[in-house]
Image (cartoon, rainbow, N blue to C red; front, side):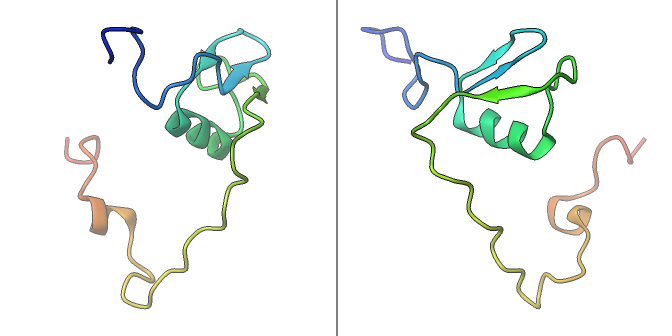
Length: 85
């Protein structure tokens, strides 16, 4: 956060995504990417409006190497804490 402007570097002053039902807004690029994957508002399930015209188009997923093919996410990221209970 910069003291002069009170903003976080990389954050926009206008939202990247807004829910059309509950009007909640997201400003970060990571949140916008995650919402593209989910396809609906994480708060109410409503439709989303992606407002950032300057965003590059989402690229294709990187190719999976043979070394990682067939591995579960838990094998790479570790066991989720909800499974460990």
